[in-house]
Image 1 (cartoon, helix red, strand yellow):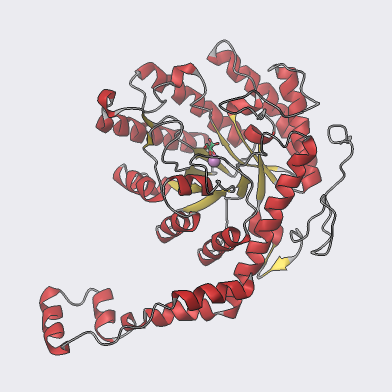
Image 2 (tube, helix red, strand yellow; image 1 turned 180 degrees about the vertical axis):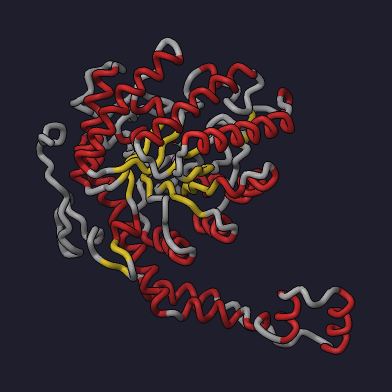
Length: 438
Ligand code: XUL
Ligand code: CO
């Protein structure tokens, strides 16, 4: 492919930790084996269309600032075709094996649904060619069900049945093009599936509609033979006051309640977990324990700002925690490390996109190496095993095996006298242990 959109940037090399080159990896070495897989296989990095190609750097108080010399100022199909080439040149130079999009990121919305679908088909043909030429794959597709005014009250949870129907048609098409592009997955993020006020909301009805919508999606997936993984992406609020998919636990409860758990996993995003009052590791553990850990949207919030700032992750402590939990649950399979992150409004040059992604990839590579080393060392695992050892035999074993009830436990407790075997939780020792590796 001709190097036309980022003329001064060549393929980002791995130069190792001593390099001072801002356009080189210090830690991410795609082919390096960590445990049983290469870094590339472990991390499955993905670049997002919406921030990286469609963001303009606007905020609530000001217009866009980002210089994107390839843009012609239009939202035409011709511009969409050109932008697709920008995306693939960017991913190739970065060495990112995947990308992700919303339907309306890649092709313009038309005057009618039929026209929107035709626009999408034209760009999808171009994306398919680019995928074949470069070997870069689609991590997941999704539909934008939150930007257009028709979705002001939500999509699947709208008070307006026509909006539900339109959303269904849009998701049907988005799943079909994701299938056409051999996407590894498809994401449902409920952008406006929630409420602004309970005064006008029939929550029970809205939740039933969301359940029905997702069942229809599963049915369509099966009908067309799409084998990619479906994910729900939790977020507690923004743009809504409350989003129904508020965190991992709420999503799992919803999926169980509507008998959808076998068809969905979760796509967890750091800044969404923190908006919900959790850490990312917390939500990963909740999903992992339920066998529903699917994919991650890699980013971070700002400690002092209360909203979804979608910054690139650079905190090695955070990436270590994420990788510890991912490795514990067997690592990413269909999922990836998807940079749902944007450069700051002040970082307006195209080269900033490279700095941002390189930094995120290096932070995750370090997190991976550190987490792997901690697991190899074994002291952390050993400590946890030991902490629960009272469950391995005796009364603990009987409880776990369901062999005793309250009456037997009462007999046992009466004989026991007092619980005398508590051990220290050793939080400080464990925190120090983690720091040995960072
Ligand atoms: C919004 C968000 C979305 C989803 C895809 O906060 O994270 O971009 O990742 O719809
Ligand atoms: Co996201």
